[in-house]
Length: 406
Image 1: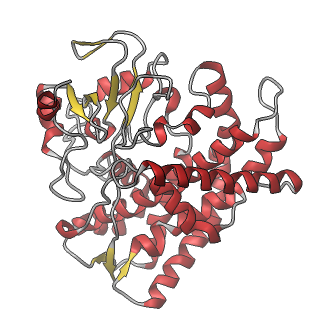
Image 2: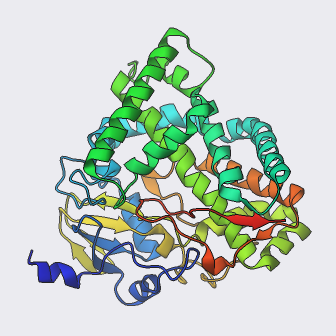
């Protein structure tokens, strides 16, 4: 494609007016161009889907799944391999049909409502300890560093039987592997190799001395076909769970608190009625304007979306964050309503690849908010909301820090 043509295609993700504000393009595209040509960080083109019904349809269609290196798909990252979603590691985990369903069932047993209820007191105790330590150091403080990051890392490390003390290494490897524009291919390869060696050694230890954790269970259990998982699948699964289990939730805890404090009447509403915590969490998930790049799907055959026929071989980029602000799906979609119910947002995706860990993420978000409301009712932003700084160059969205005082 001539360079002049590429330049005419808008770059995605779009520029945002602030860390908590949506780009104007979302509403414009939903209204006038629900299937839009965009250029990703790699320069490759994708079809951006922004309307709620269309995003849900594409994500729920079992024919289409995440791109693999075997597909001629658009690369999300500006590196040669295209980032973690196009890497060889991602192909180890089955993406289609019965094998994918089998994989999800093995993992899903660890994310049931019953297990989450059992974990809740321990998560609350850790949140209270972290908030207490933050208060002891005095304000103003960075809530992301004090609570939002260490809490989900501790939880997922505990579930996997991995030492929480290694959390800074996990954070670095995760950031590199989720890079769109921040790290080189060489840095990506090194991080993937280091993470793989670390997880491989950890799995070997679990084989020798199994514990009560998820990885030990995956090593000893057999799947629906009576087979034991290979070391490669165990390693890829462990890495995937560790990245997904801390990166997105850590960012979301900070964004949730920032959104609720940006207009402090929201915080006051929750203080007056703490029973709103559950619906408030869902509403912040829906209104997250800094959610990251979205979910890509590789179309293996022609597919019609919003009156546009996308040919087979197209990479569709589904923007759940844009879809969650669609007025045809939500009344007063741009407004935050802490009592909104039902709230069928797409923050966790939809269909066969919807986020496996969403029960855990919801539990962590609810507990973090409950503990903050109880222990720090006077909490407020230490800088104007307009001055909050976004994380740049990663496939997931977040705040660089969250300065607060109380």
